[in-house]
Image 1 (cartoon, helix red, strand yellow):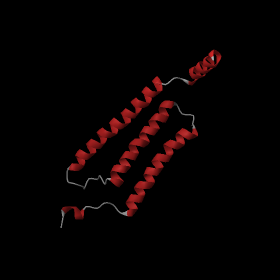
Image 2 (tube, helix red, strand yellow):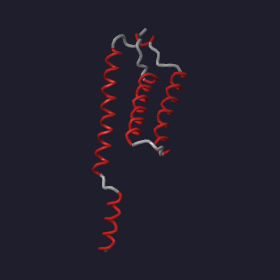
Image 3 (cartoon, one colour):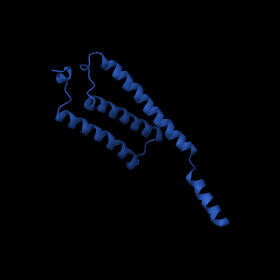
Image 4 (cartoon, one colour):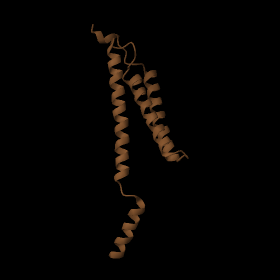
Length: 121
C-alpha cells in the first residue's frame, strides 16, 4: 500500500466549511464597495487586502490541507512560500491599481476634452 493512503483530503464537511468561509470572505469586500460606506479610501483598501489575506489562508487550510501534521517538516517551507506569495500578490495588486489610477485620465478632463472636440467639429 502506498504512503499516500493515510493522508486525508478532507471530509465533505471540511470542504463545505472552506467553501462557505471563502464565499463570505468574497461577499464582504463586494458589499463594502457596493454599499459605499463613509470610510476613507485607505481604510477600504486595508479591509479588502485583509479579507484577501484571510481568503488565502482559508484556501491553504481547507482546500490545500496545510496543517502542522502534514508532510513532516515541509509544512514550514510551504507556509513561508505562501506568505511570500501573499505579500507579492497583495503588493503587486496595490502597485497595479495605483499605477492605473495615476495614469488614467480623470473624468472632469475627459468631459472638457469631449466639449472641445464637439466645438471643433
